[in-house]
Length: 307
Ligand SMILES: [Zn+2]
Ligand SMILES: [Zn+2]
Image (tube, rainbow, N blue to C red; front, side):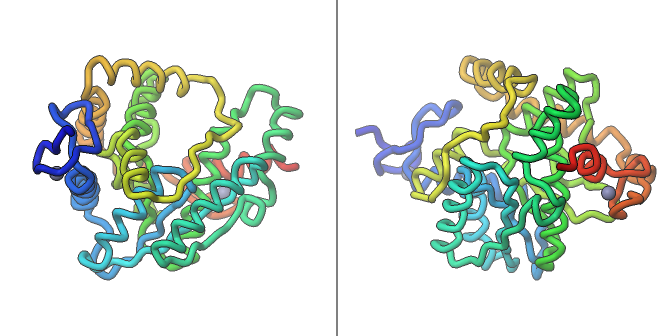
């Protein structure tokens, strides 16, 4: 039996950058400490705050809710899990089922909403419409991402939350940052790390930013959390796919690259004056949301992809 790096118990979690594996308890502690650090750095949620936790039904947001659940009472904040149904037949229902199970186990009511309800369409319809009208112009992930962000903001406000918390992990952020660099826009989404948001919108937090994807899966498995392991059928084999494969290979040969990318992003963000970005925002003529032009991206996509 291999014993834990920190105690005599059986080791269950091997980490690429630790010389010896950890037992369940010590792995959990490490994972939870990373989440605590991210929350401390973000300065949210504050005591008395209500945080809307975006659940997808996958391993990341399951781990997120589980850790926050253990912190909420001690740190004096409230949690409201929310779920956005994109309308993807054959995928979403299985994920939603797991998210409901998780909420049942931890004793939360799950607030559910959908693209249908908020935008009058579904991903299945919008993808068909994109193919018909704008062949190749819009990739499903681009409009889904924009709509999800707006849906989370609206739903979080509807449940009375003070901030939105999402399950983006270290790998997700490293990929997005490297993609931005490859596009020549290093700070394309200034909210990448979560602290900075456009004026008027709720603070968006990513407490798993120090948690590698593999460890989010490990956390959910070791703690027997219900999650759906399937992949969205609309994932395109585009730039993100290539970047993900590249970083995975790099990380396995040279562990710590994702952490290094995160460090570079943080340094860049600190140098850039982000106030200028939010000062330039106007109000969307349709929904009133923040936008650098007269029409926000969610509304633009809604108009272009109407069924
Ligand atoms: Zn141990
Ligand atoms: Zn709008």
